Length: 164
Length: 164
Image (tube, rainbow over all chains, first blue to last red; front, side, top):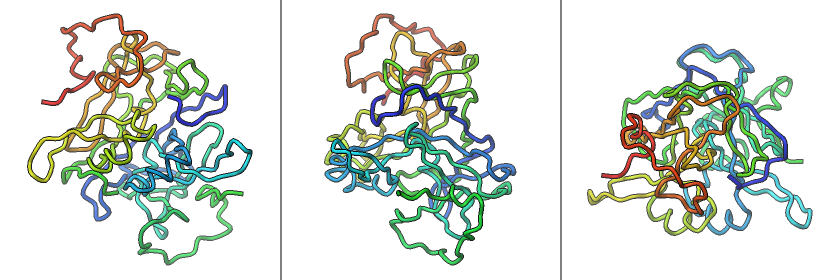
């Protein structure tokens, strides 16, 4: 599969945490839930990504519902300029609902390997929904944006890696 | 997440086989490989799907590279008519390369649960690439379509479930 170019030679384990289920009839629609305790820092899912072309994205994808599922993805264009396009996350990263207050999953982009890795930001009890913060790409009203996250959190960097 | 409607009450385990890696520099581009033996019938990956709207699909998605990654997905429209739209498979189902001859992974759609389950069609040795047959949706030249699959294969139904 050729969409997006991963750096040569990389061999990336496709880990997924056991004891996850998808439930269809939650107040937020489909959602991913833990069926047993997940310790902090556990890898939840490693998701390959499809990087969308800048032109195709602007011309087509941005006009569809699918756009709400894409992540910002930095690229360098043919003139060496830094641009931001969109990527589709092939895995649970596209299924986690949003929560600022109850966020328990953070993510880290691997631009060379073309994967996003999701990890538990804290111990997650059995039965809890796994939620991420959509951050700057939040495209709907953020009903529970109340608590400011601690800058001291040593794994805060996992939450969202900003563009430089 | 609301794209596509799963039937109420379903709770589906999101299994993924351990010992899988993604390798970027294969002759077919990115591909998924086994790092240890995977016995026949093992669940390889359970992938939630995003069902694309018929209109958005025809107007936008079919004009993009992304279309080559989508799967046929049967739906019933507002007039009760059976139609076929496209779905994006959120997981390894979108990363498996095609092989008719060396196909070792089959898939099964769950239309109500909005997931596709991938299983090993035979014992898969360590180091082998995981490949599916794209079937009727094959959009490029099928270089290795030589061997006819046995109609007797009891798990042939997993390969591709046709529309009725």
